[in-house]
Length: 260
Image (cartoon, rainbow, N blue to C red):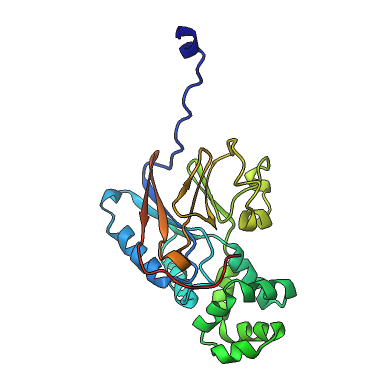
C-alpha cells in the first residue's frame, strides 16, 4: 500500500482562466433569440461575478433552425461592437450560409435542408416564395435579403479563441495536430475522432456542435450544445479561476429543422 502511494501519479491540476476574468462560453443558439436574451439576463445578474471582467464567447451556430436568426445576429453583432471582451466563433452553419451566398451548390443544398429556410424567413423572405425556388433561387434570396453587414460580420469570425489554459472552438479539434495548424474544416465540423479521443489536448477544449441532453463533461473537453433550437435549453459554461459551473435556460421546446 505504501509503495502504491509512492508511485501514484499526482492529480492533473484543473485548467485555469486568468484570475481577473470570468468567462461565459455560450453554446449553439440556432435562432433562439428568446433563449439568448434569457441567458444574457442571467449572465448580467450573476452574483458570483464580483469584480472580475466578464468575457463572453459565443461558440458559433448563431443561425438556422430556430425562428429568429436575424435577431440573434443583430444582438451578437452589437455586443461584439460594444466590447472587446465579447467574442463569436464561426460555426458550420455560418460557413454554410456564406458558401451558399457565393453559389456553392453543395452548400446550398445542405443549407436548405439544415434550417436555412428558417433563417431566410427571419430576414423577411415569404415562405411561399421560398418554396417555389430552386437552389439558385435560394442564392438569390440570400443576396436580396441578408444584409451585407451581416455577411461581412460572419465572414470575419475566427475559428478558435484561447483564454488561459482553455481553447474555445465550435466543433472540436483534430487529435495530434497543434492548435496553430488546425484546419477550419475540422474546427467547424469535426465529430469523431475528436469526440472519441481520451488523451490530453494542448489546451482544455470547450465546444458546441454535437448536441447532448446535458453538458458533456470529459477529462479533456466540455461540450455545451444542449440543442436549444428544439429543447429551449441554451447553456453557458462559466469559468472562474480553476472552477466551472453552468447557467441554462428552460424555455419552450421548438419543432425546427433537423441537425447538420
